[in-house]
Length: 165
Image (cartoon, rainbow, N blue to C red; front, side, top):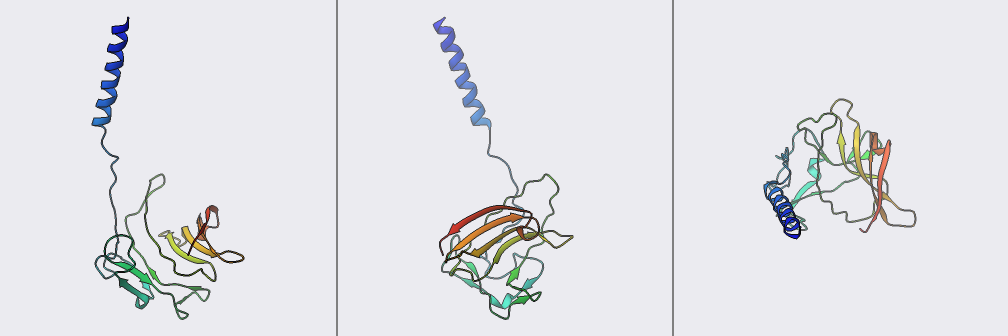
């Protein structure tokens, strides 16, 4: 009985090992990457707003050798109620039930004075911000990072986290 158990256990371990060795990493396709390594905006398509307020710097840089530095000035107005410097990319469309993964880094030098949308995913048809990441000042000082879905994150507020600036 003991040797039968040992045979079954060794067979099971061999099957587990074989399945782990045969299983490759999950496959995903990078549909777009922008890292500012070109030193220009050629990795982006679509419109820009305030492009004169975008610089390419070598310090500080989180990854690679070049970062984009966006500076919002008082005359960078949009729609009478927002201040922004904007670049965008019109890429491959996704459909209901498809997964999309994003990664980005931001360095925020000072606490915001008002809500500051730092990134958003906009629909192609309605041009509404369907996923929005924003900074907001905290009462008494400090900053929160927020993420929500729906127009300007108003449908479902998913994350609020204190951050150090």
